[in-house]
Image (cartoon, rainbow, N blue to C red):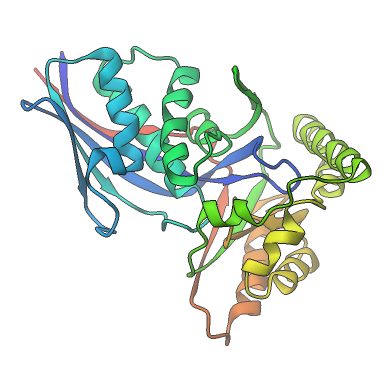
Length: 314
């Protein structure tokens, strides 16, 4: 059977996960993009934006497009591919919008081609899209987008992605102020150097967070979710961040920090019931403010990118 078309769901992701800047992320179960990949007779890549049409449709300027171009340059199929993108994640939200486009493009085209590439190879293709979006070839969004669950990016060169297990009931609350924070700008305000004592503290927290996830130790997860390097600098970009964080912790969250480069803020909780209370507490902080927002409460997206519909030529 020759696959002519495939439709996928590409999940939102939370990157950095507090203390693990640029090296850790996780997929969100209930938020993401829908992408359709269709073979066409004209060779090359075409992009159709079903919403957010202010995003470029030229493949060389589109996050999904540059990933797609790199893959077909390697495979050289005798057909072209039309990619239809329905964004469920606002660009500049800090919820892995560019990662969903990049990872989804790599996954979807791989499905259409009969899966010639392994997941590690798909991450490498997807990183090209992140480089276009942020100027940096980072993998902490695209790795969990493709692998699902939590991932640790031990190294980007050579690429070494480590999938991590996590407590089955672990849940996330997200609040997204409807303002845009560009990843490039959020990176530019970070300090270029830091004190050794601050680095040591951060290393301990990263190790503790990984250990807590692997051993289902909620207390250790909570104690480790502290970022003394990136969060204090980027907090100024997010309205009422300190109040959001305190409200989440008071409602029972294990920890709370900035999702990716912001402005979204995430909190992890032991289970969905607590996460729903945490989400409401964060909503209460923003209710009455002149800042529109949306919220999500979700489990961890264990699967990552997945096919939701497919058509074959019989």
